[in-house]
Image 1 (cartoon, protein in one colour):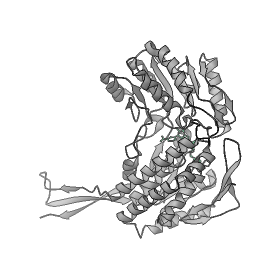
Image 2 (spheres, rainbow, N blue to C red):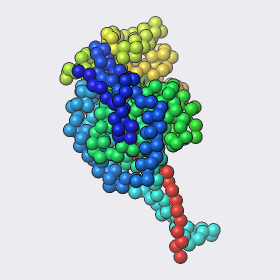
Image 3 (cartoon, rainbow, N blue to C red):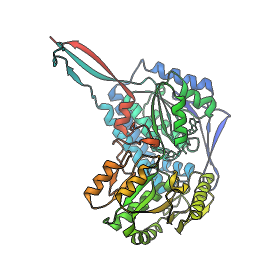
Image 4 (spheres, rainbow, N blue to C red):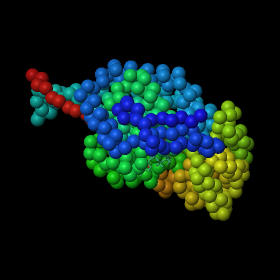
Length: 474
Ligand code: NAD
């Protein structure tokens, strides 16, 4: 049976005959529908958010709501994991993992809500000074709009909504049109946890009549967007005079040097390439392996990759479910065939069935074939030979992306060189590029973002303004 979910305008469910359909990529059955909103309802959401600010929530209230939401999420963990699976085709192992991460985001945000990072500046510290003190405090932005991608349909949403609650800033959320159902169920849990309606609206609607007007509305002070480079750059153009947090695509490498622990390298390579069906912005999109260990690494990696069973997303043994839809899988198949034409060799996998793309290991991949020159969002593991670390750094830095990276080596000098010289948001040593905790700063540079970080702590800061006032201090 499919779900029929409303949009929410300031906590009120709104139903409509104009609906968005959401399908299960595994078998194309209807998972659910969401009611689209009208431009008038968007206006109501904006008005309610602005009015609500006259009765702001205390830090304790924000903390309590976030804690309750974390508990409710834990109670509903299986239901939400099932829904993620049914709207994205991600396997149940991954969607259970995602719900766990999302609870942590809520817990960290609850802690953040209690922190006051106000500062005091004595003003009698220079010849031009005075006997005064300057004190800072934080004020929430009056309205934030968030737009989220299909991958991690819960965690991406929680990473925007939870910091906004901690900051005390109202938000209108437009989740991905491919995976909006989990976002709406999550909003219902937040209302149940006591979140006042004006603090959150969750809307579905047409790009031209709802989303673009939301982005360009002068009353909106910030756009928080996670998604593709193409849409992110378009938003940067139309948003105008607003704060923007743009978390865009990635093309992350895992660099494997000749002194690496090969057991660790093959394990990290497989986790990095295949988890979440390869659909993580920080997924390993290129394995850059030093020539001297290329053969050993490749044969060991193919064996490791065989453990990633692809198939029915709901089966507990499945480790790789579908990608988001059949066109996405067809794109992967096309870049794979093109890479073969360009000289690459498929060592494992390579087949597609509907939206299911097999975990695929590819060797002899030319550096400029579209599969690796652009972001390929799926379970492809292209291996590229590198001469040494300098070669890997030069190759990575010559590309457009700058989100994350990983290096496997026991040579600390080389590891630190990678950390210093890779032009990217993160470098993880002996870890996958995707490693983070939910509160640490996260985000990219170059085409991957403007250097403004998410992660609960940084996100909360960006969602507030710093106000100063000064007082006499005779
Ligand atoms: P997408 O850009 O196609 O869509 C993202 C969101 O933008 C969706 O909600 C979509 O409905 C909306 N959208 C589409 N066209 C729009 C327009 N013209 N104006 C305003 N909004 C519009 O991205 P996707 O395919 O859902 O997600 C995959 C991409 O997201 C990948 O490139 C991935 O790397 C990236 N991503 C980045 C991060 C990060 O933190 N850097 C995290 C996850 C995903």
